[in-house]
Image (cartoon, rainbow, N blue to C red):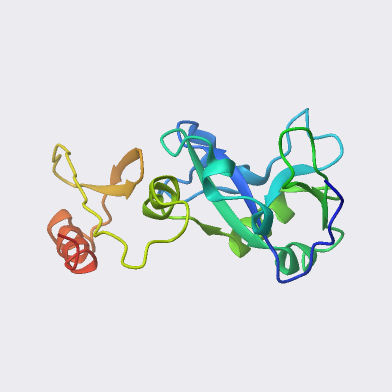
Length: 184
């Protein structure tokens, strides 16, 4: 595979494990830890160039991993960071975010990223090309109610925290009903 130029309009995908607590904030959103290089990331932080891969090929298993999407332009807007295409054996889309990724820069990257919804990941596996009319999603929620707690909903992960006084469980569930009222 020849090296391609990554334009600012290109999107990169970053995979993160769903079962690791460091990857999530107390509110259930993905934390900046998702952009934390590990010891094997010596040349840069591994990502995939979306235009030459699929969500399915990048996520591998949507029950174990989630995906973040960020534009190359957003990466380059963080001082001293860049992204380059760096194909490896078995992954032509492999790319790198280069530069020193400090905690502040990780926070900026997570702010500029979007989490790909579980429904989109599941559809990419079931329908490699987007269906003309995607099927309705179904949400099944099983939880135990403890007085004074609310539940934050995330794919494959549940977290409970004490509810603030201004957002009791009943009010939270009403908001939840309004947000998913169109789901069968």
